Image (cartoon, rainbow, N blue to C red; front, side):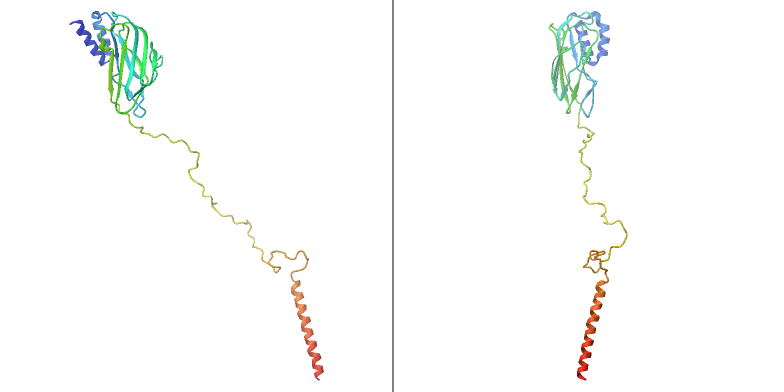
Length: 252
C-alpha cells in the first residue's frame, strides 16, 4: 500500500473518533511521512440542556500534529473557532485549554495560539463553553502554523448540529410583590354594642326630659310640684264656697 493512501485512511479514521486514530498510529508509525500535519476535529456527539441550550461538559474540539513521533514541529500554531449560526461561545480557562493562550475572544469567535506543537501520538482537546439556540447550529474551526502543512485538508472543519432548543418547559417562580393577596374590606366583622352592661337604660323623669336626678341643683324633691298643685286647687275651691254662701245670705 502506498504511503499516501495509508495517510488518507488515517485521516478518515480520525473523523470516527480518537480511538481510531490511536490504533492507526501504532500500526502505521513506521510509514509516517516527515513534515507538519496539523489536524483539527469538531465533536461528533455532545450533550445539550434542552431548556437553557448549555452544552454540558463543554464543546470539545480535538487537535494534533499527526507526525506519529517522526514528523516535524509546528510553530506559531493558531486555532480559530467560529460560530456561524445559533451558537455563542464562552472564554475558555487555562484548565479548559491547556497549553493555549486566548489571543482574542468574542461570543462568535475564539482565537487560541500556541508557540509550538511537536509531533503527537494522540489528539488533545479544548473544552469551549458554549450555548446553542434555535433548531440547528453551524460551527467551523481551523488550525494553522507557519510551516507548510503536508495535508492542509485536515486544517479546516465545519459542521451543522440539529439540536432543537425550545422554550423552557418550567416557568420561573415570580418574585414577591410585597402586596397582600386579599384587599381589606374596610368594615369590621362585628359592630360594637356601645355598652358592656346588661342594666336597663334610665327612664326619663318629669324634669324637662332629662335623665337621672334632674333637680339636684335646687335640692327639691320630685313630688313638690304635685303637692303645690293640690294646695292651689283647695284654695280656689274654698273661695268659691265662701262667695256662694255670702250671696245666699243676701237673698234671704
